Length: 262
Image (cartoon, rainbow, N blue to C red):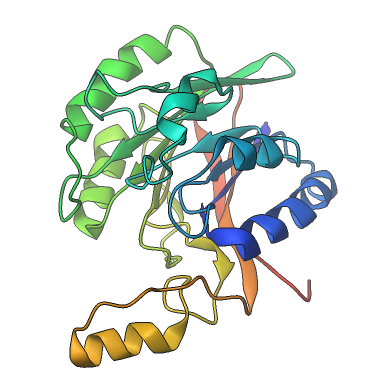
């Protein structure tokens, strides 16, 4: 049995500082084999930089996934091909730089990791995530013992549909993007762990990681303003999955939250 921890979107300096401070000890205390983190909001709340990537990988994270903010930091476009253990959404256009998937090894166990970008209410050009999953799964089955799929999408229906579509074909399907953890962690009938959204790793005294008042006033008057990253009630949110390393399916999934006072 292998334990895989996935943590939701890391938001800004408060989120990444807390992750780097706590993940290594949490990993050791809970005998976790592999840690995956979505890092697409870790640089000022929008995008990621090569420096932040390296820092996260040095502090107990094995793989970094990304989402629709992948290109928000300009220098990242030219650096992503030089970075290890980082993959962009697999269903972006073929000419985009970066890896479509990762294979993370732990004591002979090989876990395939990939992110699929949803197309409902997401303003970023991408291929059909369902067909892309079919394409990559046929390849990854030969290279891995189990597969973890992140579905980075706005629409709950699209995430749930992906879970059912891949049930019995991958170890886990976990959603991200909305920054709000959901209460539907479960094992689907054919052995795939599923969660609609893992939530965010960042400040929860906020509106999706941003200072509250500017967001409220934007709703009131519609005027543009800058949404700074908030700082209070920082938490790590994600899920812990137990995967049968022989069969490649999951036995357990639970939502986890690590707070400052824990």
